[in-house]
Amino acid sequence: MRYMTEKEAAALLPKRSDTGNKGDFGTLLSVCGSKRMTGAAFFAASAALRTGIGKLMLAAPESALNILQTSLHEPVFAALPEKDGFLSSEAGEEILRLSENKSALLIGCGLGNTEGVKSSVLTVLKNAKAPVVADADALNVIRFEKAPFKKGGGYIITPHPLEFSRLTGMTPEEINADRLNIAASYSREEGVITVLKGAYTVVTAPDGKAAVAPFATSALSKGGSGDVLAGLIAGFAASGMELFDAARLGVFVHGEAALLLEKKMPARSVLPSDLLNAVPDAVKYLEEL
Image (tube, rainbow, N blue to C red):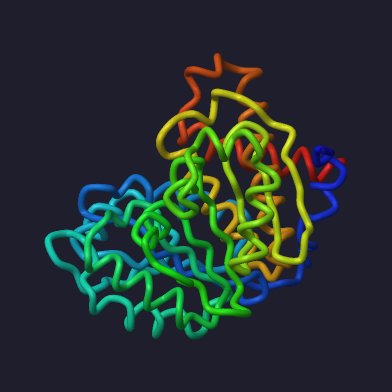
């Protein structure tokens, strides 16, 4: 097993023209958050913006947007149909409409686990034309579905071992005993890029490509860190990168930000908000290699 190197990650960074405009750098639709879990939407959106995308639309239940709009100023906001603070089943078609002119779509962070969320997520996964990054609750609600992903679609999924166990029927212990091969098998069978999170995060693709990140740190062992990662991956995907490259670059920037923070504070003290603030330093470090 060979780990990704800093130079490999640096070579993946999208080139940017000094004369470019916001339309040149991609547009992301982020469908995240619920009335009880606005933090996940905040972290994902903020991380995506740090990747350099030109425009971000954040779509969520209106009750969640009322909270998010007080702390996020860069996105355009879109209210989705809701029931009791969570997406209703009618939200799926509205999400598809909003995604029509977007470079990529992120769905799942903080959505919750309700029938309305499940219906909306399945509608999106089976019909979206833009590349989809599915994280957290977008994976939890499809765990009993057979073939939730359409053949030939562009998907990145970002499970931790417990979420992956719900998708595969294996225990987290079985998964962690053979992470690379199990993730590769799932990618091949389902036609998705799998980002299996944890120490030495694994990224696998349907065509057999694989990458392993060289990071193992408890600085990332806090709720919200995965939302930051999902936002990074989605942002890079929206910039027009190949999805496998967007996934492994997002993973590397995420881990590098954590290492930089460990030079300033104990790993146990690192917060997801610290990760957000360290992302520019991690990107700058790679740019200068």
